[in-house]
Image (cartoon, rainbow, N blue to C red; front, side):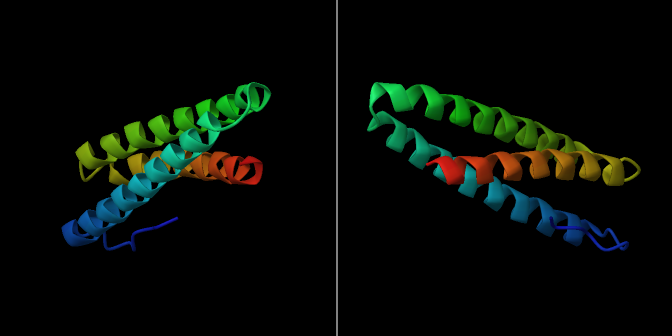
Length: 103
């Protein structure tokens, strides 16, 4: 995970947010790829894949919500909100790795 140095300057925070936004965009693109693969799968496989995709989508939405909180975080709340985001991101990453193994 991307961690800021103790010197949490505005430019460091901006760079951190930009990197996270790019990662979320990559996840979105991969979710779209998974959806396309599911559409080509026979009915029995779709049920299993849809369950995996639903979990991945929920984790992605949670990470984005934490990212939104991070963007609005005050200076004093930044570290706590950042940790909450990183926890959500770790869950998303684990879900994504499971999805990769199954697709």
